Figure 1 (tube, rainbow, N blue to C red):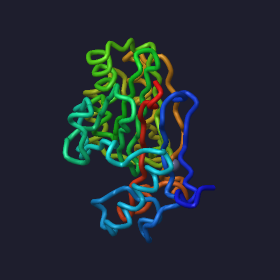
Figure 2: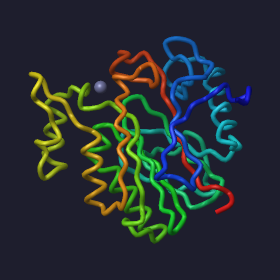
Figure 3: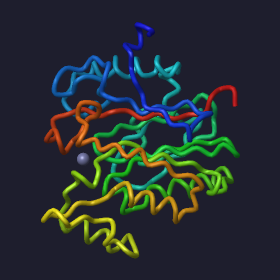
Length: 258
Ligand SMILES: [Zn+2]
């Protein structure tokens, strides 16, 4: 264990082997309750000094220069930002999808129930990252990132691997009629995406994003199957913690050797 990384335990995925990537749990950071401990969110009331220190810890764990990490201001839309060495920035661009083909640049976003989407095309050598809560899902962030990788890098969707990361599961995600109405517009067959067996209505973000990936032709789809609301010991959950919580971080980039 390296002392400077405080035993951080990011989740990694075999489907993304060949990239630098990780979805960090909340363990190991400096933030105090209710943001304890590895909070990446600057807009949730936490001490900015702790958030910055957490970010540097993660960069050290990923062996990455913080100046080479790109991150947008997430707005629950479907715009995709093509990150290059020339336009790299931190929380200035408004986007919920990111792509890059430049080795050494890391894409980074923050989550607390919304779905992290990690993309890798090993054939052209490109990565992508997406953020999809119910609003982003209805705007098909998955499809937008795949389209951007196809248009920008010439990716064949069949070569793309997608990891659908920890987010609120259908076990916990009670929603209202507004979500149902949006799903009727966004999906040809929305009913199977909702569970009404508990006397309320619950939305299945994982299956919705999986279906969109399938429709976009993505070759390999991995659903992590971890519910953030069921696992507040490991992850931040906006729902389960009644809005008083942090944001966990997801990162992906190409290795410098590629
Ligand atoms: Zn759950």
